[in-house]
Image 1: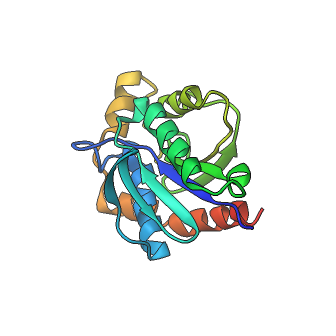
Image 2 (image 1 turned 90 degrees about the vertical axis):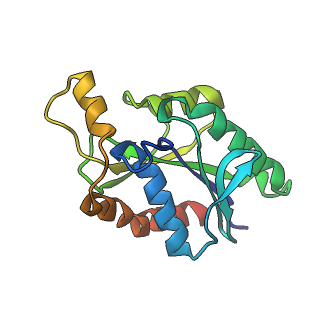
Length: 184
């Protein structure tokens, strides 16, 4: 039996929806298109945007990036509840997020370990209380300055069309990673 996977993206809601900080949402939307899944629809339980296909369920958290933990934990709990008792033990959570330390568009997978200062990932780790999950980061680059206000301005900057295309281009690589996870 193939592993069922919830792919949850984190980012920011409008007016920051198309910023570098929302690269995870932009990548998940590209995955929906690549998979030929139905468009995301608004869900109230769990709150957010969701779409389901034969292989994956994709979910976009409605919360601000830094407080994504509770919605992601609720979505994963609802996802597990909908699975058969045979599917639950092998089910996986994959979180798509922006990766400040990586070049624009670079895809990086990680399981466990430190959040490396990513407040959204920290909040998810806290909300899941030790449940392991796979992280797939999409690089957004980094400003030259390491001052927190400069970093905040950088991640909340609206993406250019070229930057959005580079983020979307990562969907094929992400799909290969997901297939490897799914096939064990």
